[in-house]
Amino acid sequence: MVGNAYLSPMNIGIDLMGGDFAPAAALQGIEHFIAQTQQTVWGIGEELVVKPLLSDTLNSSPFFRFVNAESTIGYHEHPTKAFKEKPKSSIAIGYQLLATGEIDAFISAGNTGAMLVGAMLFIKPIAGVLRPTLATILPKLNGGTGLLSDVGLNTDCKPEYLEQFAVLASIYAKNMYGVAQPKVALLNLGEEEGKGNALAQATYPLLQQNTQLQFVGNVEGRDFFNDKADVIVCDGFTGNVILKLAETLYEVAEARGVADDAYFKRFHYEEYGGTPILGINKPVIIGHGISSARAFTNMLQEAGKMVETALIDQLKQAFV
Image 1 (cartoon, one colour):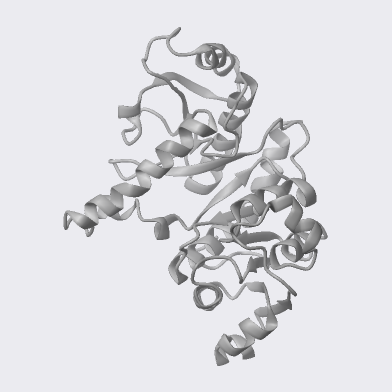
Image 2 (cartoon, rainbow, N blue to C red):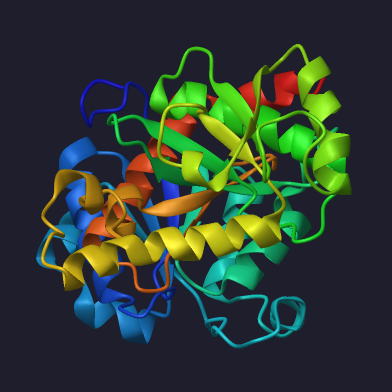
């Protein structure tokens, strides 16, 4: 990728009905993305809702394709039941297009549970992956970017899961953030080997013995934003608590009048767009429910980079 221009053509699908500000924010984000990249975006949504909001630019753009969906999966619907009752919903159609190869990546800021269930139903985990994972950004004080995995997909974990999370997140860090040899650490309540609960104690030797990883040992909560590690692994329950806490740092900074600080700006959800599901056979990104136009643009950029760098192929190679 050179600047914002991708080297090869691609098709990215986006659920226009997902998010508190849908479909207007998604459409604005698409327009910005197309202007930057001239890549094709498939917008999936309910025609009666979407069509009146389409700008003249998108209506006439050769890079925008609208796909009608008969319904939307709401935030409070049961995911599995919703897929059965709404096979022509925007999320279901998006996954169908992704599974058949008509689009190269899929994005939604809609029902998170439905996005996760759809990934398992339509796309499936990469062969050898025990559990896919969600990874999120940890902004470093030195300007670098760290990753935390898992952040909510797997609340109860086995040591083997955490080992795989480390492999998946390390490859993501290499491809998306240019970290040549990501330093991997295990979140624990002390730096010494042998610390922690049964899960941490059993995971440590697996990470230590894995030749695919540059394991640097345990890190503590005070190490999230320094440079001790590029990838930190933990169970999804712990990771989700950390994610939600980190998201409030921007709100605290805003309340204290220091939100314009370059570092605190990086905690705003708009900056990173969305969270990738790592360990499945196609690129899928889940956005924040309050995603703005800028957040959607950044999600599209993230999806485009995942396609451009052939991230999924590299993840598959790691589990051959």
